[in-house]
Image (cartoon, rainbow, N blue to C red; front, side, top):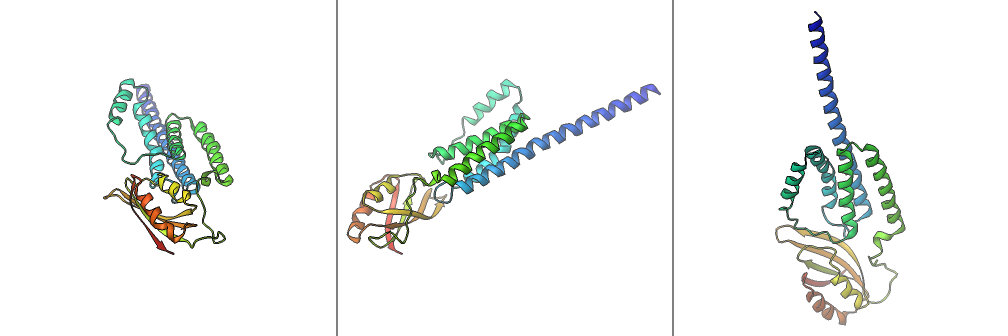
Amino acid sequence: MDATWSDDLFAREVVATEVDFHLELLGRFGLAAALGLVIAGLYRWARPPGQGLKGLASTVMLLTPLITMVTLAVGSNIAAAFTLVGTLAIVRFRTSIRDPQDTAYVIFAVAAGLASGNMSYWVALYGTLVVGGLIAGTRLLGDTQANVSRVTPAQGGAPARTLVLVLCPPDPDAAAWADTIQAHGGVHEVVSTKVDGGAQTLTMQIAVRGIGAEELARVSVELLSAPEVRSASFRAL
């Protein structure tokens, strides 16, 4: 009788332990997924189209729970950690991250995933609040748009035109073309961007004002001299 009772009690404890374990795992992954959504939302809000790296928002959203998974899988196993490093060393990313702000978002996602995987829930939550607050502050102060020249109807001079620019590789942060426009007294605003994954090109439509008709041919030649510019043409708005 006593043996049966003790066996039943032991079985219940095992079941309860298994349930707690699975609930804990779900909690870690749930927190990581939620923080990934928050980070992706902050990125989309703080880095409008034409400034940020295309696809990075969805990347950081997936990266956070993936880092949590890696943290749980490796744990304190040093051999597994070295194996993971060796495996990741063979991965090559075709899109370079040149803007320090984009790099900061990737680190943000990695840190949130590590904190969630290590059960440092308060670190993850408070860290997200603090970094999110700093992102909001810089966005409201306009620091993220300090390097973008705005084109407004109030600006006089030559009529506005649309510059259709094709870059290869597709790097929206390449600044040579922007320096060329500014060197000729023009101001610009990126209107739209489109990436062709097969051809590995980025087509940008840019509103340009302040460059006279007699300068357009010279500007086009200078734009084409940049190594990343495949084609450049001006059109009337």
